Length: 348
Image (cartoon, rainbow, N blue to C red; front, side):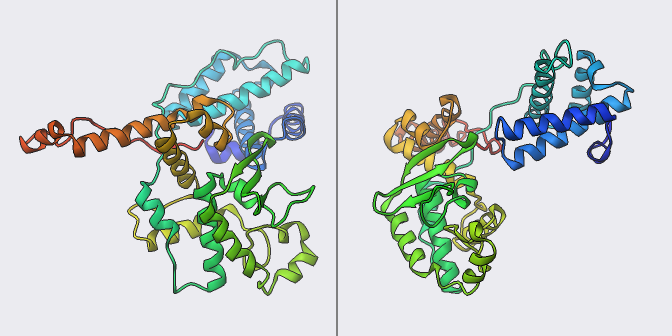
């Protein structure tokens, strides 16, 4: 199988290249996939074309046996089962589209499945750590930047937004805005995955932090020039010192820095605050359906992973408080009546 670098740079035969380009245009327009998803689809399809070219096959001659061999090679090279599943999903969708267009007679990926993987638990902060991060006041930072960053933390943790939903917020509602916050109604309107709009309540602490930020947002020296040059970017709720919309990478960077200054053991990223929001609301309310609506999950099975986090919380409380659990510690036992398996993070 071709290496990743050769897969990304290999050229497919002209007919195949045309199919891939037409398919990518189809999913961009008809399915409205995000730019990041389109980038991944393009990479995976170039990988498919490179594999077919190496086997001296046009794409319409690829058989199920070829796909299984390529998947085995991916697995043998160390690709995670979840990554293999994403590759297969892309290829399967591509061949399904070719069939719909009457360009092939069958889908060679239809009956190929990725290796099973343990469903990982998302990483969430404890309540005390989340509050410590939200209440951090960095006296060494520039006041304008500090006010903005505190508002970002409060909105991420208080609303459970994805980082793309946060950076998509505009300072005021408009027909072209992807999202905005109604300060009077204490509600945020956000555009989530699949271009699905949902309303999310905004807590009082987040409203206070947002009010402080909006009071100084216009003090950015570069905002006027940016508004003339890039009005859509300058309309963002959260802007950089250049007067334009903050990127997801900038939000990741500021959260990492603030978590270290707050003395947290683990660097925090935006999705960890989303996981923390979901876990803490579920612990307090036990209302799984409400958490699903707040997160904008299309399938409640995606939300159910947080019930496992909730059980871990209860198990730790039991081990710390129950007399019979403590007795095991005193007797030189394991120190815990329950084992909690640590697993890698998963974005939902």
